[in-house]
Image (cartoon, rainbow, N blue to C red; front, side):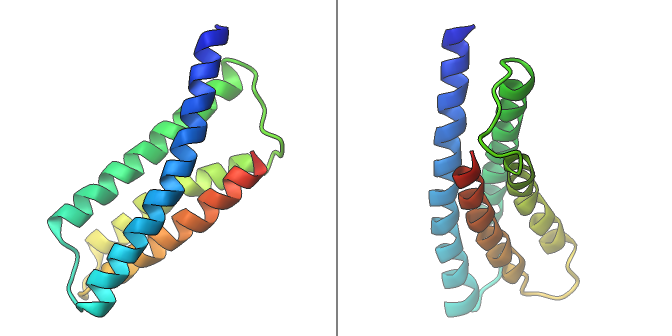
Length: 127
């Protein structure tokens, strides 16, 4: 159990920082596509968003396993709120983008990645 705990804790930590870095990158790409080029969401961009959102959900599952299975607790209880915000940010803004009647809808992804970066970084600081 100790080796599994160490692996899951490391994976949780690496996914957190990866999410922040990739979020900054995707925020920049979103600003470039949506504001500089004035284009709408591309299929590749949307698929990348779905992949990143799924990794955030996997990270939340790993955190729940660490909490319930290994008894690991974050340094601050507010980590749960920030972690949940990180896991929900992109799916929420993806839903807004997909259901938007007015185009271009890249703005929802720009907001989504901005939230992902801010809340993800704050979550790391509370962990």
